Image (tube, rainbow, N blue to C red; front, side, top):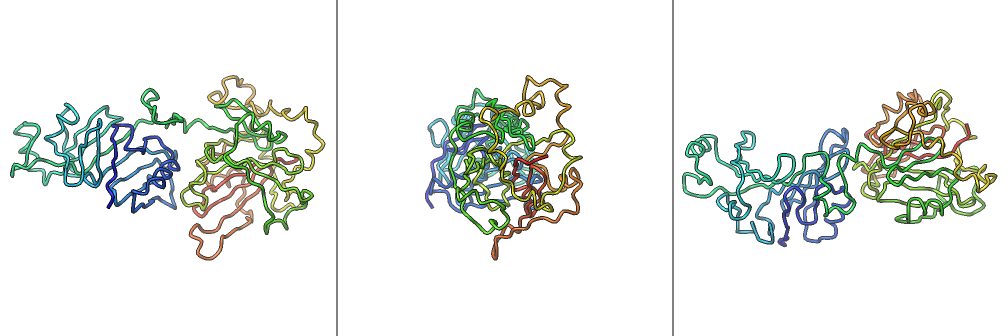
Length: 433
């Protein structure tokens, strides 16, 4: 086994694994370093938010623990303390055949408060830094009686009855606060924060377009690639569509000119442009659930989808309406370039925490419908009252471990529902009311 050198920064990182990293970035680190072996991904498929997502690097004795909703790294457990070369302040504190002992704490880490005995793990736990952020060392003690004797002696650091020193069997680096301290967050280039999860990166109005609060930019269905490049920046990739089996469902073929995507993998969404009109045709948001065939291709999109007032009262099911089955924006050809951004009054109608310029009376133009990456299909069915819809079903064939995918369509929106009844993606498109 190759020994890996890993530097410990309490409350912040272990080597290149940084608290607050998205799961995709962590996987990149693992793939980039060939020394990490025996990697296992553990998650709850049926109830994805009930248990943490865990990456277990078995050969190196490292557990990487992620919040199931934010998909951000919240805790690093080193259960193989002597599997790697662990350093702190440029000094080796543990290595193969060199255990970390309690007696060494004073010289290697400095003074701290006395530890506590945990009945569940039968460990003596020593903690450094604040309660909410720092590092914990676990030392397994054979039984409670021995601990009682050690405590009665009131002599620290303690030794066992055979005069041997207590050895650290597990190290936890954690940040249990729901926001990272930006002043100590230089390692995280994008200043990721746990609290940011409750603030959408994208707010969309069905049939209108999207608003990006952080960039204070708005994009509607008449925008051109130049508009998008100016407002959002260069995409991760540009992909041109190729004909597929679903072409039979399309009423128009765009005269052989292919539509094309701007893929923003790090933002978790795509923008589809009409190949003929060169204007925005669709927005696709990705939820990045582990049990999805495109997992780890996109960062989880933090979107919030709303609808114009009276949208739900006037909606009809598009999959049962052949006239609406194609989502082409043929009428866009008649739009004057001067009107490319004429729908911004609707896009600006968002909550005060998203747009500080919003007036409360403007909310009358927005319905109560709110859909996020965490909304499941049961909730959407209750919103749309769509219990009897027949979906379009897609299966990737024999040996597919992800199960079948169902697509449900309504005016301006299509839901991709995966096997556990959560959303794999959401597609927004322009529609005629």
